[in-house]
Image (cartoon, rainbow, N blue to C red):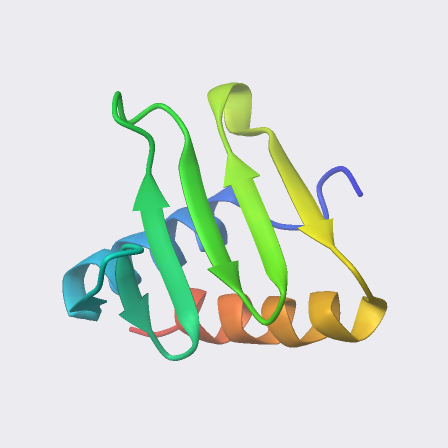
Length: 85
């Protein structure tokens, strides 16, 4: 799974969701994904389509998901948002 997601694309998607997303109790919500961070801001979270992505130090991340379909749907949303101008 290492290097499956480009960290720049992931960070662009996170920032887009933070800028254009609607505030909810769970975090900002934009195009099917939630984005939020821990209290100290060192770990970023992206969540949606049954997937939780944790992004932290040294551009490392971990994906939690139940099925490949969930992962595929999540990745498509993430890449689409990350490529927006």
